[in-house]
Image (cartoon, rainbow, N blue to C red; front, side):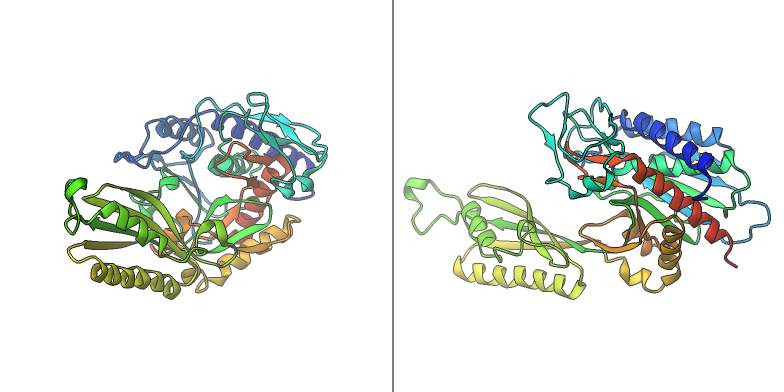
Length: 419
C-alpha cells in the first residue's frame, strides 16, 4: 500500500480529523473513583466511537456496563486466518488537565521552538524532545498550552479507526477477522479489570507506544508495597521513654533505602523503589511504594530489603508495629511474548514493508498488553507516534500517525496470509 498515494492521502486526512475530534473530549481517569469507568466522561467518547464503528459496518458493536467497547469486522473474502485483535485505551492521564483540549496544528515545522497560545511561558523545543528534528517541514500537533494533548491514547484510537475506515473504503485490501477492543481506565491501572477475554482474537496488538518504529516487547515487573507504622503517642512535654513517633520513624525508614535506586536516578534496564505516597502522624504512618524491575527475582530482592529494614526497625524501637503488604500489579510481558516470536516478527515485517525501521524496546512502565499476555492473549505494543505523554508539551507529528496506520494495514494483510 505504500505506493498508493490516493489511499495514503485519505489515511492522512482521516486520522488527523478523527484525532482532533477525539482529544476534545475530556476522558481523564480518576484513581480515587471506585466506579468503572472511573469517570463518566469516558462514556461520552465511548458512545461516539460506538456510533462510528457501526457506521463503518462492524457488527456486532457493544458498549458494556463497564465502559468497554467490543466490535468485529468480518474477514475479507477467502481469508481463513484466526481472528486478530487491535486495542487502545480511551482514558487520558489525570496528571494534567484534559478539560477543553484545543489541538493546534503547527504546519511546516522549522526545527526550532514551538510556542503555546494559552501559555506564553511554555516552550517545546528539540532540547525537550530531539525527535522533533525528524519532522522538519511537517505538521506537528500540540495542545494550546493549558492541557495535555491526549495522544496517549487517542492517537491509537484514531489510528485503529482510520484503518477500519480504509478497509471500508478500499475493499480490495485484505484483512483477517478483526476484533477491536477499546478500554477505559488504563492510566490508573484498571484497563483490564473487567475485560471479556473470550471476545478477543488469537493474537493482539495494543497501539499505545511512542516514536515511529518502536515495538514494545518487554515491560517492568511491577509490585506495590504498603508499609504501615503503628507507634505510641504521648504528650510531647512528657513523652520521654513513652512516645514512639510513627511518622518520624517512617521518615527514617524511607531514608534508609538506596538513595540512587529511584526513578530520578535510573534509566534503561535499571529498576527502582518509588515512594508514591506518605502520610501519618505520631500514632500511625504509611509509606506507599511501587517497586519496578525487568527481572522478577531482582524485584523480589527489593521486597526482601523492605522486610530486613522492618526487622531492624522493630528491634531499634521496641513497641513499634510495622506491617508490609505487597501486591503484584503486572508482570514482564516478555515472559509470554518470547513464547510467541511470530507476533513480534510479523509486526516488524509490517513496519519494514511500510518503510519503517523496527526498533525493539523495553518500556519502563506497563501496558494493558502486559496483563493481557498473562490472560492468554500475546500482545506486543506498537507505536502511535506520540511523545512527551502526560505533559502539556505532549506532541505528535502527522506523518507519524500516517505511518502507524500504514503499519496496521500491512500487519493485517500479512496476518491474513497466514495459514
